[in-house]
Image (cartoon, rainbow over all chains, first blue to last red; front, side, top):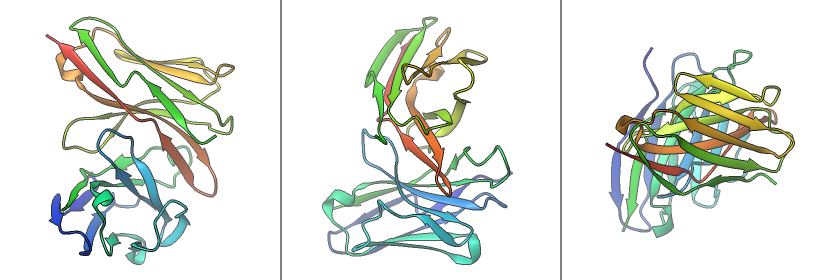
Amino acid sequence: EAGVAQSPRYKIIEKRQSVAFWCNPISGHATLYWYQQILGQGPKLLIQFQNNGVVDDSQLPKDRFSAERLKGVDSTLKIQPAKLEDSAVYLCASSSARQGKGNEQFFGPGTRLTVL
Amino acid sequence: QQQVKQSPQSLIVQKGGISIINCAYENTAFDYFPWYQQFPGKGPALLIAIRPDVSEKKEGRFTISFNKSAKQFSLHIMDSQPGDSATYFCAASLYTGGFKTIFGAGTRLFVKA
């Protein structure tokens, strides 16, 4: 089966500009996650969707970050305006809602964002 | 209470040796403990996982040891190979209306040929 797809793979922007990332999860996976991975750290959850509803967005900086999941499939994560500290890799992951499989997350390759 | 503490930050092992990475958690509600492997430029990939009702799980050269009373778990890589050189993340997961996973800070493993 095809894996989690993300685009773009790399993005360089100036601070205060806006940027958007796209994710296409594994077909049939009900749960979609966006993580921020700062260099040298583990992934930190930003937002979690179950189908097209938000399950957890407690760590999403809502003054500048927003995310949506269109029709319970693809998702976009937007940053507006970007700050220097947003430089990181943004990872998308998905998991199945099937019993016993919900914990297993499959990650995309990530988008490396550099804010200058 | 939601933290997962991982050590060491980096590890150098000779080819054929044993690599050991340790993690500790606080929240006893966690009920799934996966280890992820990440190569440069790639997303993390699930390597092996354990639930707290067993003390050990082995898959090939990879073994998780789990100590529920100490709230600690570790990854052992036997017969380490240069191809194992990567960053390893432990994690802990619990269900709160959806599965929430907390990752450790990661261990960079380098296996010398």
